[in-house]
Length: 442
Image (cartoon, rainbow, N blue to C red):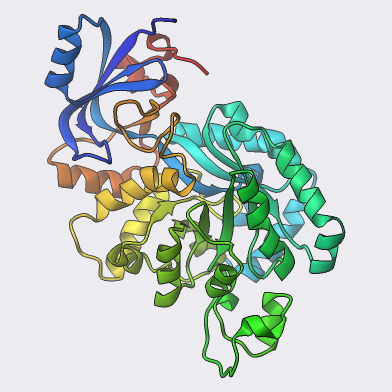
């Protein structure tokens, strides 16, 4: 067995996520794994007592788990022109998106560039929704953790029965096995009822994952209606038919009855969610990936961030793509979530810490990668050594976490993925943290 060198990474503040923040903390990394986490003095002494030689890198800022981008479309990285203006809702945004999408693109190169941008922002895992097969290898080739989700969109019941299921199963089987695979039924309004019923079975037979856009369009909201019988008895074939029949059932309730939601599913956006809808998500163990900057560009309302926090809903953070967001840095969305939560009346001192948790462990949990041998999203012994270092001055814990949550965008000084330094600023290199210190494995 190869004896990997041990690197001791210390920082003025270490944020383990599953343990209290540690002033003057440290973690020891050996190979792809975390060996120790704790106060610097204790970690140093523990390694010394065991006779373990180490290379010490001290960062005068904040050390966190690697960020997890819980919703993005990396192949649209070259479509930034679409996000240069704001729109009046999803349909209006689609009118700007579709002509640009229809042009010739090098989807593989664009997706690879998006992966590189994420790594430079401190991201070590992502939920990447893939529409064109050329983009399917982005996470794998970049060495990122997460799930590549094949997008399923615009299938009618008839076409699905005829050839859709076979096509989608073949597409899913063609995705790289690493880091992970899944299906993304686009939205309740872009698929008829049969594919929405069968996609969960396809995924679950393979032990894979589901990711769906939900609550992104105003047409998905619940509205008052008079109905003497449940909608399920009416034999409707789609959400559109449900609406035409006069049912005001929310899209969340609709897909819940179709078996889409569950702990192996996470949703994107969750903007148009009633109290009842949010309760359904909690009951099913379904995480919502909040993408507030994308919502603002598209012209949607702000998501009910304060309600999600007060009610204890599982949340994560996503950037969406550069076709609807200014960057692929989740810290930009964390800052916007801070602003929205406060404007909605959330005033507890735990706001920054909870949103930083959403941007790390929350996203890992959404994809089921917070457990098992390759677990990530937090700093603990045995977890994968996925780390992000931020150039944020440290004072007391509360003030520092607030400063990081409000101003962390563009401040990632280094990114370590599975023990290997994949991004480093000049300042981090000057601190001794260049990639040659701890090459690890890729």
